[in-house]
Image (cartoon, rainbow, N blue to C red):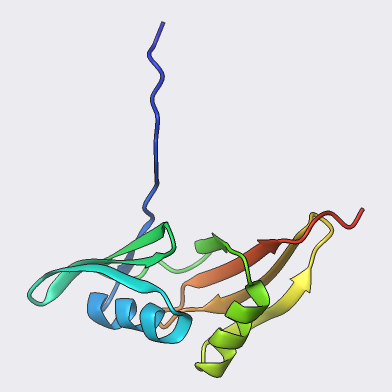
Length: 123
């Protein structure tokens, strides 16, 4: 019988034209924390929102149906932070029947980002 494998985290890693500009955008516009930049100039970096971590590497963005979903507390506060910092919102905050309040935005590279907060089921 196979042994069980545990996993403490998964780090989505997205290709971006500028690792530094992308990390700075998340820090400046959305209040993330810089985890690291690697290389000179940086070819790899990571940002944190609490324990959630996203990595970026220097490459051509792979846009389309890909998106990042952040399950957070304070979705309305994040929405106000985003809009007051010029983030392009593509879907206003809405509470859905499955118990999540969510909004969508685009980052500086065109990646879809979505923030959601559990507010309890409406049905």
